[in-house]
Length: 308
Image (cartoon, rainbow, N blue to C red; front, side):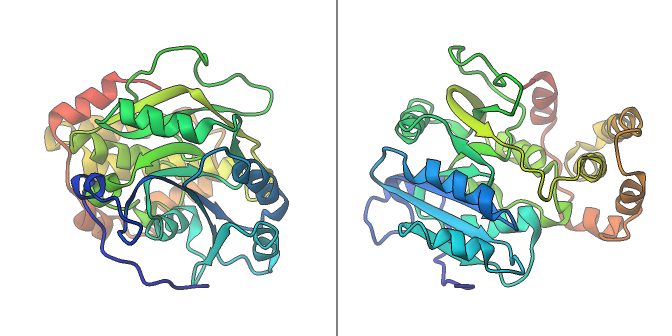
């Protein structure tokens, strides 16, 4: 299936008010969104853990980002209760997340990568309880562990406000997407969560840690190119400042972005960075004209004061 008719988005308040199966946003339902490209074996492991979640009203949607073979479809066919959708063309990770989010009907939207999964079978129940207990939280950042490293936070630590969340393990309150908009697809990859976090905070919602809800991120080697990823991170840092920094803080923001790039120059693919900064893929001036909408000074400075 490559296209599905989707009803218009609803606001956070409208979503909270709807309860019927026929409505777009179903209270208590958790939508689990998993974009995938070329990682069939990794996806199988993720789905094995995900379908085992001990929670009644869940929907699992896999977005095949136009993998050139049938590997993703073949894996999904092993799991009868998982929905498969395919993008009409390769959109990249950011575009695939936008594509899939538009199809979700749950009150809460759990974002996973195709190589990350919840470690506790009761995690979905805990997610709903956490979001109910923190009604102003637009996005919860889950506690992620990668191979040979500890979790981001001690599992028994208290929840705290965050500057941003991580793409391979987070939970949205569904109406937030309608309130602040989709990811900016021109970013292509890396840093899209940081940019949308600013919009979420500027709309008056919190980003908050959920230390007890644990995610393992296997970090598949397929489609993982660290030097390119750092180059995109650096270029998107500059783009983010150009469109979101208040005017009087814009020089400061651009300087921070350039300093970050210099500090990581030996780790990045410099050709990719230069190409991105000079607008060979996305011309910079039209991009800024299209998206320039600075957040408030209060939001900007509050985000800078927070850490993850």
